[in-house]
Amino acid sequence: MPVNTEVKTIVDKYPSRISAEPEMIDRKDPVVYSEWTEDSLITKEQSDFYEQNGYLMIESFFSDEEIAEWRAELSRLQEEYRTKAADEVIREPGGDEVRSIFAIHYSNEVFKRVSEHPRLKKVIGHLLGGETYIHQSRINYKPGFTGKEFYWHSDFETWHVEDGMPSMRALSCSIALEDNHHYNGPLLVVPGSHKKFITCVGQTPEDHYKESLRRQDYGVPDPESLTKIVQEGGIDTAVGKAGSIVLFDCNTMHGSNSNITPLPRSNVFLVYNSVENRLVEPFSGQKPRPGFIATREHR
Image 1 (cartoon, rainbow, N blue to C red):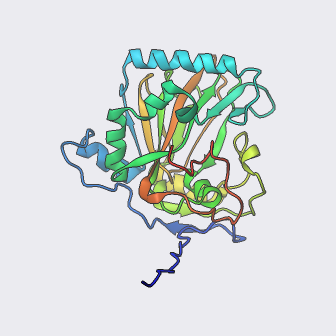
Image 2 (cartoon, rainbow, N blue to C red):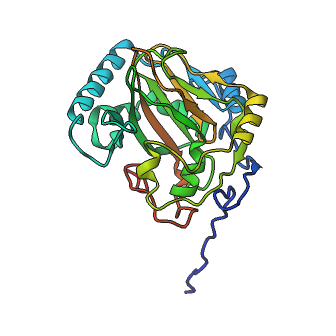
């Protein structure tokens, strides 16, 4: 019986960090991967808004009781890791305060249940068209007075180049554990930016993740391209009460300001990827980032 020795070639649809000048490439993938039905849990207007703008905010998605439980667990973890070192714990640039704790869907039973929440998974399934898994999870802390900014970026650019995510069939869900105001460093998004892929310049250093999770210097868009997409789409601010969620496409340009107010802003951050879009070798040609940042095995 003949043996099939054909090797499937993965085409790099979104080459980045290889040219001296940035480019804008048209998106080559869908945004919403399934047809809307009355069982989709969100309205057709919400689905269409996500497709057009690259993000969707849903108020009061989770109950006060759920948020209270998760906030208590968040505080417990923050205290546990205040002086405890771990690869999964990222601290603020120039300080020791906890900025993020990664892989919480794997290491923490409370947040594992959050990632598997049936209502949330149903919405995700509609947008990504079927079964998904967690590509990345983390808790983000943005304490009052000291919470630092995070510069504009497309998550997909990093996930594609450094992790080997082939296509734009992933999204992020940010769950607000505290009220998000205009003034305490909320998520900023550029509507419509998901339709263009902005290539970045500069070769990726080895083990770039060790610095980029605190401060990103590679894989960030150039000022001219940023100016163009903001002129075209504007900037929206994701504000809402605790219990609200923001869903945004993997290629939506986003960032946040520092928090100089007394009011903390923390969230649970879950990245869902389609099982049909599993990671391949990084398109940078470098070794993959650790599993606590980019899941390569379905857990």
